[in-house]
Image (cartoon, rainbow, N blue to C red):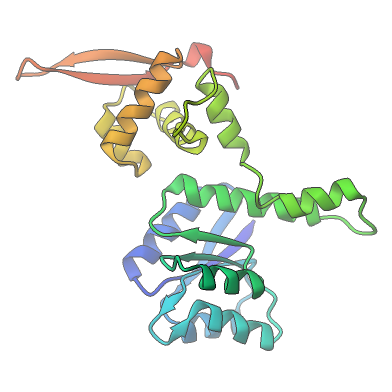
Amino acid sequence: MIDILVVDDDVRVAGINAAYVGRVPGFRVVGTAHTAAEALAFLERTAVDLVLLDHYLPDGTGLALVRRLRQRGHHTDVIMVTAARDIATVQAAMRHGALQYLVKPFTFAGLRAKLDGYAALRRALDSSGEAEQAQVDRIFGALGAPPAGAAAGAAAAGAQLPKGHSALTADLVREVLRGADGPLSAQEVAERSGLSRQTAQRYLKLLERAGRVRMSLKYGETGHPEHRYVWDRDRTLG
């Protein structure tokens, strides 16, 4: 199990991020902090594998916190999760050893991709002795490689995704449908995935055209039918 500390100045956002982590197998949140001082105090007394770190904190920056951690001999891995988009901050994060950088706002699929990459990195490093070039390539490529779910999502669509469409998003819609007890509307898919209704609708239509989703009509009192979608389990690829 990979233990995570979530650091974000916004209590609500920290809770959402922690809930996202809880949905990824192999990861668990062991603490949350809302200031740099709280995070530092927590890490002084508790060993964690990974910190999901906001940059804008009320008593400093995330990068300043990383510097203090390294000065004190803490080598906990860090993934920046922040609204800071300027190249200087991104570059500084790289130089201070952040393994990944996730820009807010993001979806569950976006965070899961980073966590899956981190898990792949740990697996690649879980050996001793000397490394051949192939293993070195796996180590350095782990965090940048597309997660298995993204490839599965593209395969699930039955064809190459059209330009402008994301395999991660297709996979997210697929997993929502596969986990449902029955047909869902586009609005319900949007609520369960964290996507907008328009995006959910677009990907549902894409998967329907590819033959992976079946659509049915549900008539209500207004007389206007509601489109309902269900994953075609008979054609699931695995």
